Length: 187
Image 1 (cartoon, rainbow, N blue to C red):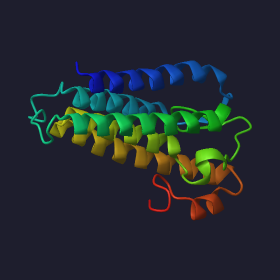
Image 2 (tube, helix red, strand yellow; image 1 turned 45 degrees about the vertical axis):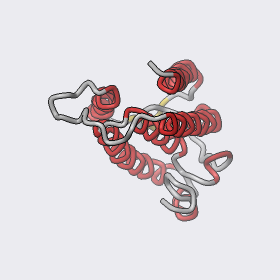
Image 3 (cartoon, one colour; image 1 turned 180 degrees about the vertical axis):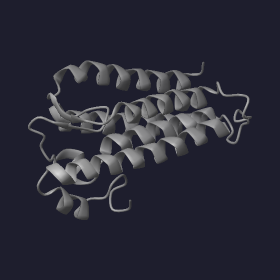
Image 4 (cartoon, rainbow, N blue to C red; image 1 turned 90 degrees about the vertical axis):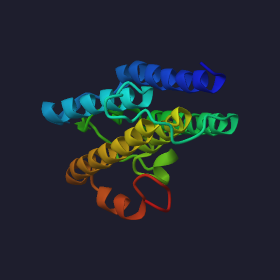
C-alpha cells in the first residue's frame, strides 16, 4: 500500500475510533428511528465500504477512471483530512445531541455554533469529503458509485432528521431557512 493509501486508511480509523469512543457521552434517546430504517443505513454502509475497497467485482465497477498518480494521491489525502477535521469538529460541537441514527435526545438542543453556523449537517459534509477523497484515491468507478450512494442516503437521512427536529425544536424552521444543508452558501 502506498503512503497516500495508508494515510487515508489511518484517517478512516481515526474517525471510526472517535465515533465509537464518543458514543459513550451522549444524552439518552427520547424518540428513535424505527429498526428497518436503521438496518437500511447499516446495510448501505457495508455496501459503500465494499465499493470503496473494490470488493464488488461482479458489477464491473473496478474499472479505473482516474490515473493513480502522486497528485491524485495528494488530492485524496487533503480531501480526506479536511473531511476528517470537519466531521470531528462538528461531532464535538454537537456533543450529547449526537446519534448515528435519526433520534430525538432528552433535552435536545438546536446547535448553531461552530460548523453548524454555516451548514446544517457538517458531519455528513465531512464524511462525504472523506468518501470523495477515498474514491479519488481508488480511481475506480465503484468509488464514485459509493460517493453517489452516500450522497443520496445522507440527503434522505438529513430530510428525516429535519422533519423530526422541525416538529420538536423551536426555531429549527428559521435555522433551515438561513443555513444550507451540506455545502456553505450553495446546497
